[in-house]
Image 1 (cartoon, rainbow, N blue to C red):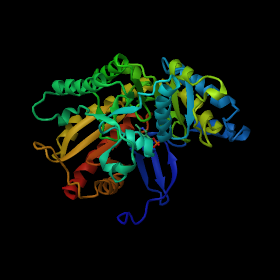
Image 2 (tube, rainbow, N blue to C red; image 1 turned 45 degrees about the vertical axis):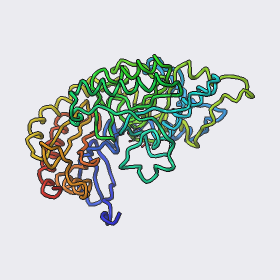
Image 3 (cartoon, protein in one colour; image 1 turned 135 degrees about the horizontal axis):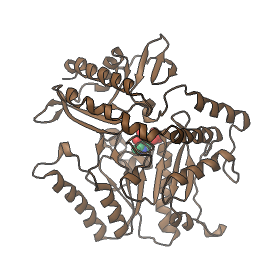
Image 4 (cartoon, helix red, strand yellow; image 1 turned 90 degrees about the vertical axis):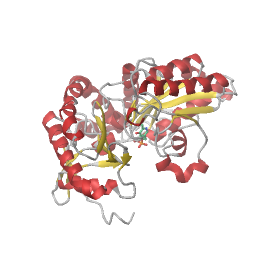
Length: 427
Ligand SMILES: Cc1ncc(COP(=O)(O)O)c(C=O)c1O
């Protein structure tokens, strides 16, 4: 990428602030890729890391176990209704690869050879590895690898702002669901439906309309398709609930967590399954039902220890309730953001906001895709003291979850100034 001659070197983090080598401060408006919970340099999380690092730094979970991983598994199962067992990995993409492998192997384990297809929503995103790219196929990101990806069955997703002509939004939701049902009822070869829980984030902050996810879950139940949820970006409070599938009133067979699991300090993810799935993997050695999957750092004790401390803090500090209050600050700014003439649509839930930018509000044409929008916004944001990223024509606000109300107000004020100053450069 020639356009970035060099990157700013971040040397410190404190609370919501990132500080570079020259001493410049920026509010971390992307929570360090959507994972930071308590801000940077949190003493409790640092203490948990230090304490564990003096005892056991890494020991494999192959044939062995250790206390932090066991405790974390108990904690995760306790907060995840209907889930039974945990499989660790060290990033969200791997957690999704594991989810896909478990779903496909489940049917083999129970001697059903027909169910081999994966269904998904268009525009979903599940990570950058090949399985995850296949299931979460965002054309703009992955078009160059299309030939190497495995095929999936994709269904449209309702986006109120871009409801196709001739539909009301409600009709279009029904249309999307009818398409799923028509396919499910036609043949019984679908192993699993994989989707982000609550909203598509990387796909452009598409927040599902009420009841949409539950209806997909109901169709999965009706047609015996496994329901696999990706809560890597949307769980743990990002959309305002600890467990997003609870809010959506549905029960997955498999769910993946990542990002905020360790408070955003160390790399860890988890795939949870219900008892039905877990039991299908049990048997004698030569039944060959076990899952052949494991990474070197699976269940790393330091990451598990900081994840345990993070979960304790969620509870002690009543973080979810706090998010529900703090996130109202976004609403105070809706009008002011909407008044900017390149803003086409605001989509907001919990601690996530996407601001869609357009050239023409009536025609809803996205701002010039030929321009490096991300770089323009990064540079204009930096002038305002914020670390901002865009996804295509969407400005993403994904702050650390425990951001204070006054800090969030300041972030929104700076974002508005950034959009206004970037405007002439992106048109
Ligand atoms: C919904 C979702 N799933 C999976 C991933 C992949 O996680 P990771 O970047 O840790 O591999 C992401 C990352 O942004 C994501 O947003």
